[in-house]
Image (cartoon, rainbow, N blue to C red):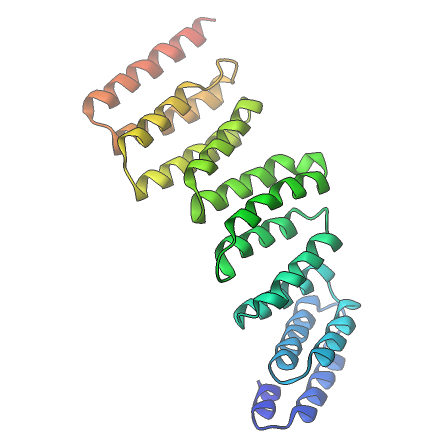
Length: 254
């Protein structure tokens, strides 16, 4: 705060000196505190210094703290100042430098769809295929989920629904994916309770694989009953209860 006060008073050189002294005072093992100091310094240089001076501070910090976190912090600084050209170029650097980081790709897509003005949803969507080519296969499912969430929240919910349908079709025994799908569809219904969306939710539950374990099925069917209680009527709720009972009895008989 004192450095910011000095900067506001026109004493940029003294503010930099304060930042340097603060860096020396904070032990290297206090990573979070040092990161906060570097971010404050970057803010100072971005607001009052030159691009060259900002770059010099960034390069120095990049040798001492987590590189991905630092890059993302600088991106946040650019976004806060609506410096869209700088932010876009930096995100391109981030996804090249940290190609195997799911977080890097998702945050770049979020920036394109939700932050930059004007929004660039098509460019955000195009990132998914680039991300899947760059990321290890074990990260693919979660990456698609994150992009689908982004569509539900800020893009095209129907596109997000299609993405989730593809995932549960490919991985029918993944209860976590079914749960995410149901949550996302329910959140969409809270915004627009159109009849076709309610029926789509019902069809999604009915398409659950019969090979799913009984414990998992009980959990999903409980959610199904709760869904009908909220969006259906007494007749549809009773019908679902009977469907669930019949299904569970048949599985127990096996």
